[in-house]
Length: 118
Image 1 (cartoon, rainbow, N blue to C red):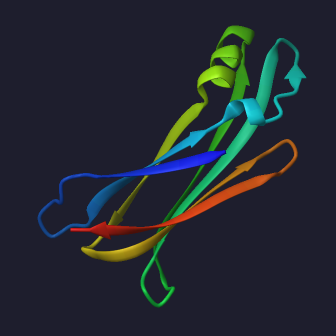
Image 2: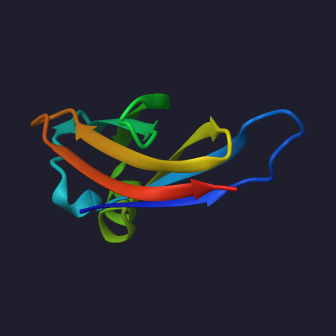
Image 3: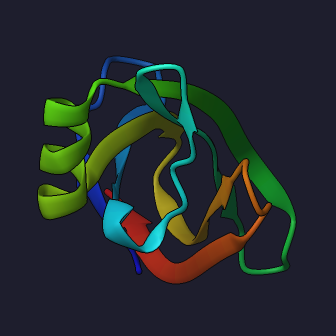
């Protein structure tokens, strides 16, 4: 399953507060076909903040191409994969939506939670 955690950084003068959206992905639940001597997978991450009226305030997308040798693949299967995206937002209350799509079977996992930026 997908787990998402948010860490708020220090607000800079006249700037948005940086928000690290941390994804923990259970790699044991993902297909990793073998290509040559590597276990391959592609993960696409999206994190988006919406205001109370549902308007998107900010969003970020990232992609990670994995081509793992067997020892690292076994560790990922055991411990999972940790990735993060950083968003910036002014003070306020938001709805965070986080989505992960794996690139072999194109399965999607998503979560949503309320966050507050001081």
